[in-house]
Image (cartoon, rainbow, N blue to C red; front, side):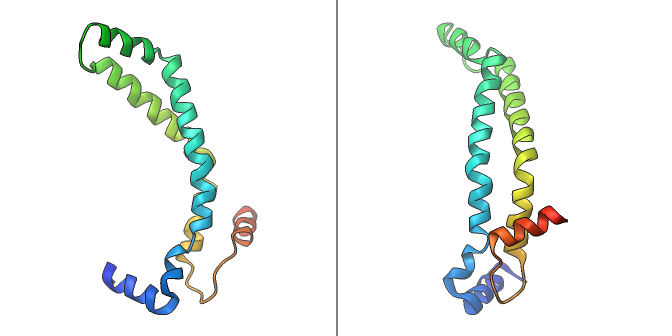
Length: 118
C-alpha cells in the first residue's frame, strides 16, 4: 500500500483521531527518554573533558578538531545506547498500539501489562 492509500484508509475509518494511535505511549517513552539522554550526554562530555577542549580551541581560534568530534560522537552514542536500554520496552508498547488492527483502540495500561507478561 502506498502512503497516500494508507493515510486515506486511516482517515476514512477513524478520522483525524486515527493519526493519534500510540501517542500516549510515545509520550511516555520520549519524555523521560530525552531527559535521560541529554543528562547522560552532558555527564559524559564533562568526564571526557570536552568543555575544556572546546575552550582551548576557542582561545586558539581553531575550528572543531577531530579529537573533539570523536569524543562527542562517543558521548552521544554511549548515552543513546544506555537510554534505549531503558526506553525499548515502552517503544514496544507504542509499536503494538500503532499497529493494532482492531476497530477499538488499545488502552495504554492494558498493553503495558500484556508486554510485561510476555
